[in-house]
Image (tube, rainbow, N blue to C red):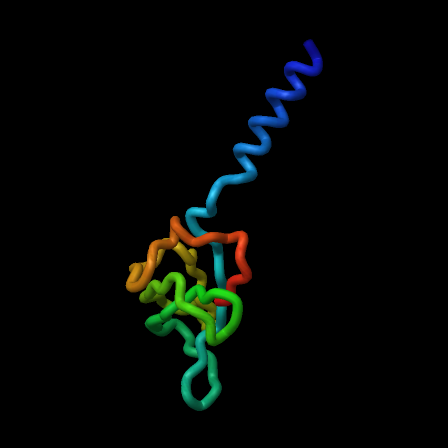
Length: 99
């Protein structure tokens, strides 16, 4: 009976760990053209996920409109922006990807 429960537990753990991410957190600091942080300002960001290298095929692109904090910090969830290219849910995370 213990083997049965262990097998079921292992099966459930495998299913849970194989889920495709719905989004992931990202932080950055926004700077103006003079190199100073953009404090409490509105910024637009374009995020692209590329295949294999910085010049690879674009698999997914989305945009975000955010407001920075007092130090220019921006928090966002990649996968929850406005999609412009591709589908976040169909990304094959088993390949080499670049942001």
